Length: 398
Picture 1 (cartoon, rainbow, N blue to C red):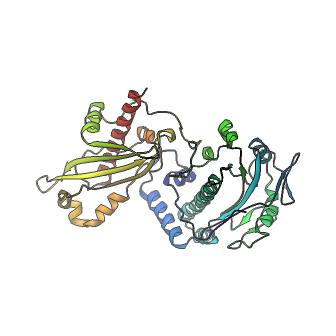
Picture 2 (cartoon, rainbow, N blue to C red):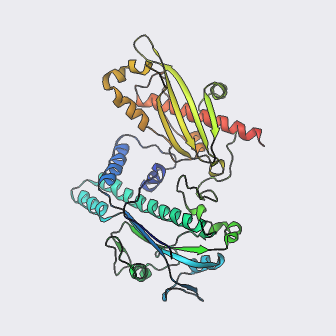
Picture 3 (tube, rainbow, N blue to C red):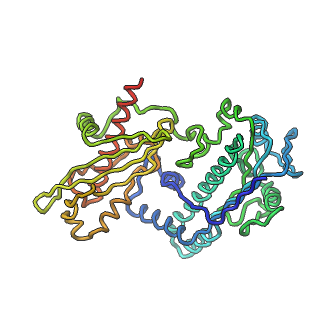
């Protein structure tokens, strides 16, 4: 029987998911105080957070009329029961994930210290960690199932529609009955968990993978946004999974300039997973020191077309051999710290490439990299050029 235990999972909260849970609109780029708080919450958790994942396959599962029996314990969830029956599931995996009590304790302390901003950003980051842990658990289960020609269904949890949260203590007892969980997890009389940044879940398992192809609502990939998963069968349902990049759109940059840059400055390479590696060279000059020439490289990794070309990685740095950047006035003041700031600026990371069209940014055509606004402006040029080039490719293949 399958069992999974990870007491130090590598948490990788997607920026876009964090921004979504913070309540900002899609495509928003955090700036100023919000950016400072988001970076602080991420850094705090990286140092003090103690997340964990535990999962095990149930010894038995019976799908009855109106209830599910897992190892003799009865659960009533019409939604979960229907899903398991549709997929002809033969087994289930019980899972528990926890972001750790530390984040909850620190958030409470911040609230009592009358620091509501820090409280809110850390509280939300803890919730995003839980989402990330569930996706990680699902990816591990997918790996296990794939090796045995099986498939794992989307997870379902007490408190979701058509599953009473009052059954959560019974599920926790069942989950931890055979083996103690790595750290304390308690179900309160209300059904809530302590630590509260935790989740219990049931994953169905089926050998009938053809069911998933016919019934897309059962496809776990439709419900999972984990970046870079090698077992992905379909696009994340929240995204725009099969809408190509349209060529007839309104860019912030002149289309003639985009065409020239796409031909002269941009190189694209298709990855084995269907994604795209893009390299853009920007040639500028310093604003002082008699306008010395400089060159920066922009490297991007995009996900596959069917996922909407999500931006998986992005980085900006001086081109190999460039020395012009060392004459910028900001570099003369801050040195390598400026290059670190430039490398950390990754606007729209995790978002579909199409969102560059709605990205509101300040127009600042300065040719140097001294000011954040000018760097943001350049990122806009780069992303629109990549969008333009891929959209033209779409046209050619229609």
